[in-house]
Image 1 (cartoon, rainbow, N blue to C red):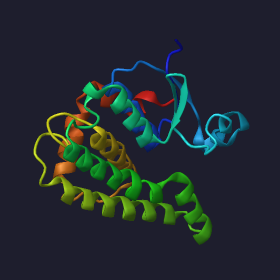
Image 2 (cartoon, rainbow, N blue to C red):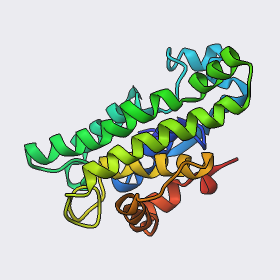
Image 3 (cartoon, rainbow, N blue to C red):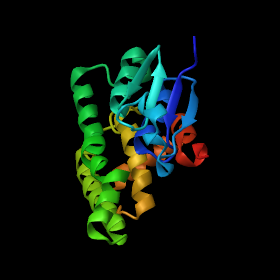
Length: 210
């Protein structure tokens, strides 16, 4: 059987999530870089694999899997013991809510093509940084409020899961863009705990960049 193959970009938050998930699930895989800055995601050969022209794309189990959280949930179902999703239904609901707060509220408006369009509309390159800082800071403050009442060292319980692998890449972007992290003590604590784990450390952009 062919080894799993991940098409990704080193700085992509969505790709970062899936790299962590593969690590937590213990799935060895090969990587093929898709350089978004060079427009490689728009090449006909890549569009034939992923018609959306997005990363990541995971070739696994003889199928082509797209959309990062759909991939993560597939891995959670395929490897139920890896902890990506809790065993209880209310736990899964909470983890999904935390994950979606990042992946569906913060990430979409801070995606590369969205920020580029904002610059195009305004004609001011500084708009990109202001835009990123505003939406990342606002979204993380709301996430912090969701996390304050949670027990355990991670987003949910005593082991990292889907919510943590959404949070960590978003915090990487927060530092990159200079977002205001004042008062985000729970988020910063969770990020530090995750950073000490091999699945997170091995997936970090600095470890996988070309």
